[in-house]
Image (cartoon, rainbow, N blue to C red):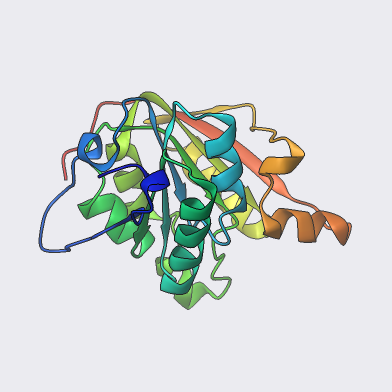
Length: 206
């Protein structure tokens, strides 16, 4: 795909009938692949891309309106190292992202689905965690932030008991890379919980 600075859309086409894309074909440059899962307004994604132009960044969101808005900003700002995907999180990780391709996965403020009957919809549950493990390179990093304490505690326990991951100190982002959600919570004096993990176990084929 040509660089976004050439006024070409950064949006990738996802065909759910095709198993796994090829990240080398998505970008016109080489470099480590990082994914922002649930990229929202794109504040973090855009700031990260500007700060690290040699890193390939893929923003995934289930809301098409968000993806199109970010795409317009990418084109206007002439950013060449961002690609975008309109898809459900788990579907994208299982079917679109190649195995052992991703150096860092960011999941900031995922929907906590607090009602027990909705827990199966969470990004962090059995099958999605398998998909996360599949796409990460060895020692690839997963960085998580949430405003929901119960969900945070659930996530920490989930990964604590999974031998394929190990906990590491949580990432601390500079102000310009904080998401709109995080800024809103901090401005209200509300706590934000963070945790980070590294992939340690063998790759899962899916």
